[in-house]
Amino acid sequence: MTLYHVHWCPECAVVRQKLAELGVDYEDVVVPDFRPLRKQVYDISGQYYVPVLKDGDTVLTETRDILAYLETKYSKQRIAGGG
Image 1: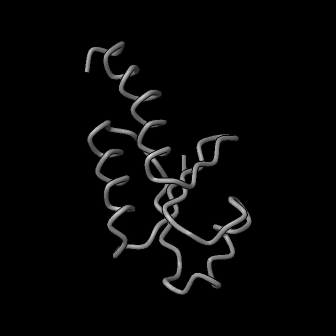
Image 2 (image 1 turned 60 degrees about the vertical axis):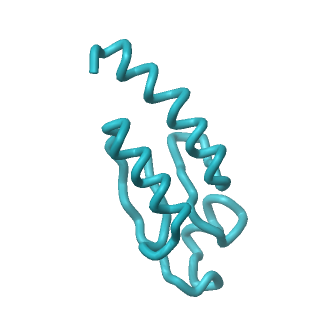
């Protein structure tokens, strides 16, 4: 799983917090502040905005969708794993 973000973005911080809360390991990719330089983000998602979460073939670009995905996929694993 890879999270593309910038440090100053409040929505990115919310996603990083959710990943930490769920104990999910992920690759942390800080992209340029200037949107047109975010080639990696564009290549993956077709747009320049962050956060972008890539988990296998799943690519999510909206914060609410990312949070819902993480909650659905990883909170169930925590419960099943006893943690």
